[in-house]
Image (cartoon, rainbow, N blue to C red; front, side):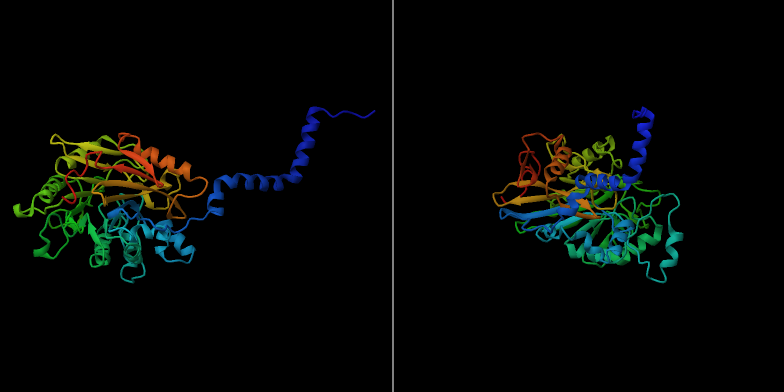
Length: 421
């Protein structure tokens, strides 16, 4: 009579049998799990964008968040045996088809191949910081070739290496074909008289209809010793008299030229603020946005948190409204958390019918490269991005059309009276 195995004996036999096939079964399981996780990048590679500008757009300004071209971003380029400009492989057409492009540049520029500079870098690291970034000089060419007209340098990494990073950055970028805001040789100085760069300077430009734009860079997140002041170079911060200077600059910007002002119609402010990795903005951001609104800011370009934050509109007692992009998230970065890979290109469009809108191109970051969402997971990624951005906007102000979140600035009461008369 055949003996029956006990339960314990059957379990032991199963363990012995499983050991023989464990490697095969594990490989099969990994392959099955990997398809939904990685199949998007394996089977649907990102492609360079095409025809990014509709015919009805008369004038377009593109804006992006944090760009960092050091650390693992540089390592990825080196491992691929490609130049650093690879990071813009898929998005350059958006900027080439814009009239003006700006973003936040989240690192100083230093040359480790310079025999005079290389020995100083390690010793120059600030000891009151845990994370230190720097990019190499070819990153400046990458920005210019991609189509950037200006970058904000007022942020919490620009002086990671103290005066060395400040001086090196100005040496490599001051005379390059790109405008710098938020950094300078001192604060609130006369550039024409001194020939130096004012950290609180306003960059100005115009469109063909005579609309005059201004852009300034400012940070509420900084490290002791970063702040520009009288006779001291650095970045434009809220420390010392920073808020007073910001108020004066915004007021002067909006004054007509005949009254000694800059006659700016659309005043834009790059502001580095908020809490890292927090999807919602904080009370300090609310207060600072209201402050800038009170003194004439029209568009606020926020960054620092490395994640997208809700869009808001603030209004002062005179009825002036400001469109606030609390954070545009990362644009070129090496962080791995899913929300740090969600991004947008914000585009301020003046349309041929006289209306204005702000549209948002949904972006993902893969292998340190931003690219427009695509493939079978596009709807899912777009939903996540749009849900965060529009959650606090009046539903009558926004629509989703042509693969973009579009905000009607006329309906939102922003930029009233700006444009062709």
